[in-house]
Length: 187
Image (tube, rainbow, N blue to C red; front, side, top):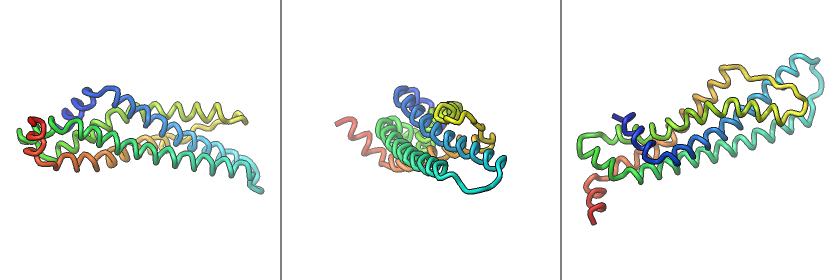
């Protein structure tokens, strides 16, 4: 039932789902670009004799990490706001589902699923975009694709973060009294 509710909620607001996918794609693009930078520098360092570190390279790594932290923070905030808007938008349908026997846990899982479903293609799209972004931004021309497990961890970690962050407002919305929601709609 939660998956069907999530599908219904995502299908009702396709533009919201597209916005969520785009937000996640931008975030994963930044994360993958930083991973590609680290993989490229790790390969260069292991191939060259260890000596003094290049301060420009160190500053670039720090700058990209700061940008990535900002992107992750904004994406997390966006995930919470989008889930809150979805929970508010679906309050009547959720109240009817609860009146027919759905539990608050099933409803919050459905709202979380509505956020994770569009996040999956966004996260998958962010991987090649991140590698491409790093390839365009890297003036040295050397691009090392990060190991597959780094990329998989970035995608799975992003999806897990979206699910956890979306569950917070989903749980709050799912525990509102059914009679209060349905009475407010008739007034």
